Amino acid sequence: MKKKLNDDCPIARAMAVLGERWSMLILREAMQGRSRFSDFRSELGVAPDILSSRLSALVAAGVFEVVDYQEPGDRRRQRYELTEAGHEASTILVALGQWGRTHLPSDTDSGYRFVETASGKPVRAVLSRRDGRIIEPTEVLLAPRPGETVSQPIPPDAPN
Image (cartoon, rainbow, N blue to C red):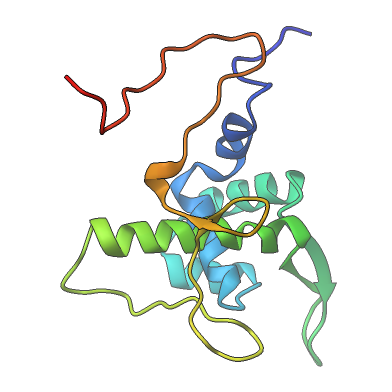
């Protein structure tokens, strides 16, 4: 089997699953507790074939699992529940929401806020070292792969 471009890159693999607009919006709706096809469709206004395709891809990637349910007097249906991987993707949504609110402000902000389940208190995405010290985004660099050389960025305080 031929190796696909960037198969070894975790960012590329994540983008292959989550990088499509509808996938992230489906995930956003699931974070609000929506789990039924009809709920996703009515909230997002997405065509049924696109929604079905995206949900299938998210299930195949392990972001959702399909659970059968039946309400009294109704036929058997399916809902989509977030898996552990799906819940862990909330970090991505929090960061995207923060970035969008800061750098792409809108007069018609949605009002969405990420909050801790237990307390209802707001949460935010932060970068931290393994020892727990919080650091700024300007303090982060994507290190090259082992054996790879790349030119290092010039530090902002370097003399001209």
